[in-house]
Amino acid sequence: MSRELIAFYSRADENYWNGTLKMLHVGNTEVVAGLIAEMTGGELFRIEQLHPYSKDYNECTSEAKADQSRGARPELKAYPESLNGYDVIYLGYPNYWGTMPMAVFTFLDKFDFSGKTIRPFCTHEGSGLGGSVSDIRKLCPDAKVETGLAIRGCRVNESRHEIEKWI
Image 1 (cartoon, rainbow, N blue to C red):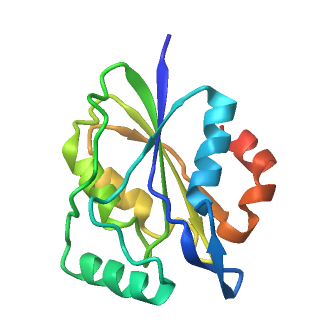
Image 2 (cartoon, rainbow, N blue to C red):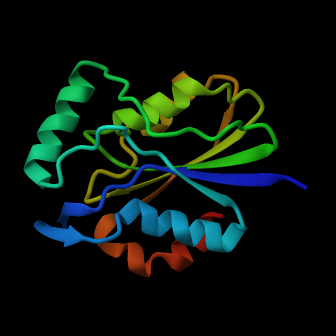
């Protein structure tokens, strides 16, 4: 029996939400990851930076943009012990300037995804998946990277049907 992993990066705190800033107790991508876990029985793994970005939205975006500009690979708090035994990896993240947060790049650099199926999903406020799927394909050339799912952050709580169709 195949096992599925839902690895996701999500940010709570002050977020851009439908044209304004809003304090979130649970990040949008985490909401989607939880729904996928509920529907698939997959195991959840949170991708977390050792040194998280600021809780303030504007400071966070400055920090994240600086990391992206220099191609940083922020250190993570933890990694799964292994990806052996997982056939499918659902990979979730918010869209940061047309791609994934750099912590997700760190996660992808850590493992060999040969023979794995990666199913990307992202949350956004208008920019969709951007170039993230092609970035995943470059980082994981021996994985099967399937069509991704993009969900507006302000609609995550109404996205169950859309996620079910995608799964």
